[in-house]
Length: 396
Image (tube, rainbow, N blue to C red; front, side):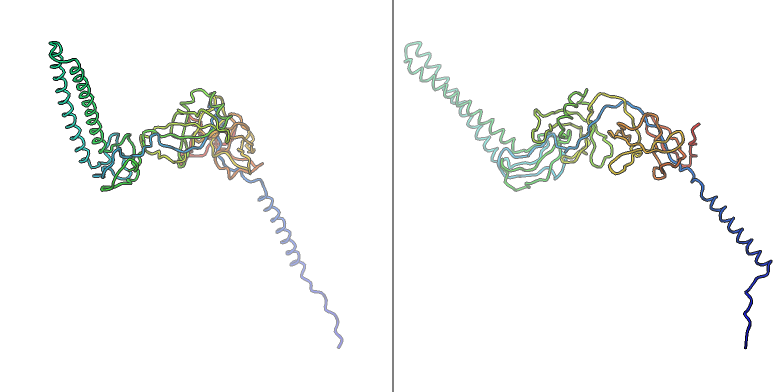
């Protein structure tokens, strides 16, 4: 049975026109939404502060180790049995404090024997003197020979020498008896006690060590060129700062009181020593120390907060915001760190606005909304109080 082909499916004209109009509307709406969302992003808020100009000397930083100004090995000056230990491990002691007592009885006996010998010598000297006086009288009366008088004179001199010898023996015995009380020669802190009660002590045995805590030295080596600059710096002895490994700043002031008398030709360095007050006892010999010494007279330098400095591989830079609020990365040469402020040896002029907060929001070529911070008397930006409104970044 023959079948004729079916006509193609067609929609009524009104329905098709409605679909075409809807598609056109969707296309126009999509274009408008992309146009609205594709504009420039809003300016990122950042904190900025001007680079400040201050007068500071050139400064050199070094590393060193602390050493005790007084380090004493406590050894007994006489041998004997330790009768009593008067100090504990690690105790702080004053100068002259009693540390150990060595059995004094043998030395008391020796002192008594020496004093008896001195008494005998003095008695013999008096007898010799009396005999000489009688012989002198008899010689004058020609009742005795001159030879006998001379012999008695020699006997008196021998007796007087024996008195001097006995006196020295008594003094030695008293000294040895005094040495049985082992005392601290300087004020400081003792180490571990290496000899306890009942042990035999001798001059070869170290009972403990004592380090003075009043003053601590920091030794450090400087290069030849640095030493030549330091030698020309004024008031070198009053310009040393020091900080320990856990101190971000250098809070301690000291003086350079020793410069070695020759340069080490192997390392091309010379050793210096700085002394620091340690009455609080916080400086322990052997600790690592960072030191800063002024290397020139004060001069004008540019500073900015150290947190504003960024790193690009091996280069340092800061973001400088111009009048158009566009941040520009500016390569800089860094100097010393002074109280949280970094010296910029080159790259920035005084008064230029530098980004000090919100660095992670800065993008090259994109404007920022700078919040200009006030500075304290040292040039450090003051923190923004919590809840305070942000300052306007627009520059008129």
